[in-house]
Length: 238
Image 1 (tube, rainbow, N blue to C red):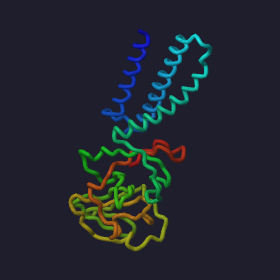
Image 2: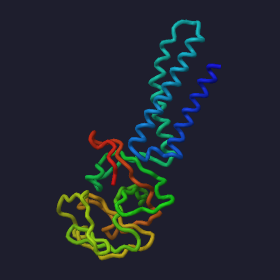
Image 3: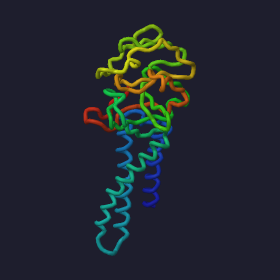
Image 4: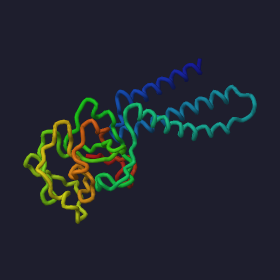
């Protein structure tokens, strides 16, 4: 009876954990993913300790203390399992390979992407998105959508005649002229004008060979930083 009860408890905890990933989708927040990782570790450790207790009680062939090494294995399994559940729930960890979105997203940051965000919604201005382009994933910020008119003047962006207030933008000096002055250009319906926050070096919609991107090419929305410098852990990308 005890084994059946322990098995039922484990299956219940495992089911609750799966529900937290999907459909509740708690990883949308940094606190939520921390909570779920700790919970997955606890479930695996509890399951291992229960197996050790049952094995020790049933054994008559000497000490079984060596089985304690199953606990590190359980922790490893919990991390693998959490990554699998993340993917099933529509999330994915993304390694940023460029400086185009600095200082918001640093080169080599690991961030979490929500690949289900735009299934029933469209990207909005200020969203930080991952775009699938030329076989690669690139991260940019949406600044204008279909129907908007955008213009660049003296390093500033104007959408529908109003200058955007962008405290997150970085200028490092000496950009090509086409990055500083362009337009006015009206964005076709179904397309997005995307740029990098590191404005003087980012290759984005301001360039003719890049141009606006189709809404269908947006793979997902960037949520927060998972790994970076210590003070940036959990930094919301907005």
